[in-house]
Length: 491
Image (cartoon, rainbow, N blue to C red; front, side, top):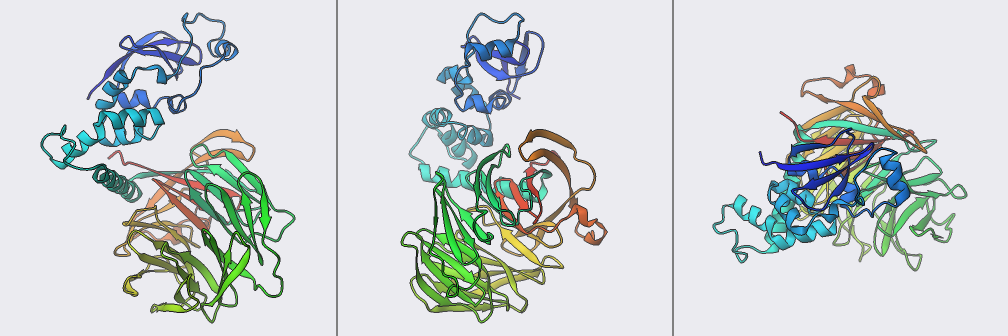
């Protein structure tokens, strides 16, 4: 195992390190003496992610607070950015492929150094068995990008299937949260409360809050980097993330009750209880189309990048229509005629996944408009199903029985099942405005293990879930927000 030597000057709360005579850099480290140690390069690089991301030097007051009244080095504290680029290259060259990919995402400087040095290209060609890694003409940056994406998806699938799991949970709403969405490391929660909140998926701090106590109850929502679009009864509301809010004109009496909503700029689609899908232009705030999708209520929606509207019905059918036409393109029916509760479309494979009120999951190939598989993965209602963007292998499913299931997208087979363990929290962390973040243990269920023996308190219904890289966020129509984190198995 490759190691490097670090010399530490130690204070009360932090340490200043030096790598083989280079300028010192500051890291959080609780020790009480001056030491010299050997450590792995990845250990050194991951000790201070905030400082690695470019934190500025502390002023003199903050410095005195950190070092206290004891002796300290006669040098201004600096950041890990002070390491020379050649030194960082030496450290980066000692990392394995996956650690190097992670380092390239820490900050712009590290990404620039890694890309300029062609370290990823060299390791990529070595893994692929190419001859001279210095020959940059063998494969393009696109091939490297594809390989990195494949590697990330394999790692994600492996951890969801066989990794160790724990839950971080906190009380995020005073009344309850029924829905959640995840984008760009942010989690949006709401429905059931008079506010929506955006959280960091890493430290669980509330970053933004949007109140609508003067409006109708929130039914559904989604968001992106600039706005939140919400369905409130018979109206659509857009919150600009700079604080401004705009409401579509009220259509009481002519606009039936909305049950679900999805949007792809510039259009938002509302599924209604009268079986229609209503298409709105979000900028003119006008209804541009009314499409008859079902004879029963539209219970769930999904939109494709090639302008398809996919809707599930309370009567068990799935309808396919186009945004550019008010005509139905296809109606999909399975042997299970119970109501469709969840839809999930994968643009990478053009597969559509559906979950029913009987606990069945099904998969449809939209290129041929035919079913590929159907499997009863749960004894009861499936409320939500999602996959990581670009992942064509795993699907995460949740429902009324509170069991988190990982399903193979290609076969419908259940890969793993998880429930939260009963008992006190394994640990607690910082207190926020919304309470303490607790860490709970997770139990992996064997194939033949019955869920009836597991107390209901350990498996509250999963009303909604969102999938990120090696993590799943769940809401349960209660006060708690839960983040299931998956790690590589140590076995």
